[in-house]
Length: 126
Image (cartoon, rainbow, N blue to C red):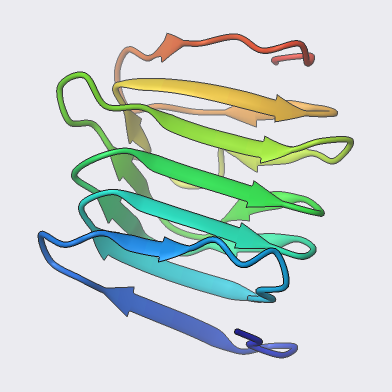
C-alpha cells in the first residue's frame, strides 16, 4: 500500500487483527485500531492516535514518530518498535500507554503515562 506524501491512512478493525506486513508499504501518517496490530513501512512512518488491545509491532526502514497517543496496554501484551539505524521518537503525545515495550533503533526517546516494562534490545535507549 502506498499512501504518498502528506496522506493519512486509517485502519479500524475493532476486535480483529490488522496485518500490514508487506515491506513495500509506504505510509506518511497511519492510525490503527484493532486487536493485534502489525505494520511494516519501507521508510519512515508517523503514527497517529492508535490503540492495539493485543500486541503492537511497527517496523520501519526510516524513523518512527508519533502525532497522537499510542495505547497497547493489555495484560501480557507487548509493543515492539524497530527502526534499525534510525531514530524512534515516541514522546510528543502526553498519554502513551504501553504495558511492555521493546525498541530497536539508533536513538530512542519514549514517554508513557505510567510505568512501562522495557524489553531491551541491543540499541541505545534514552
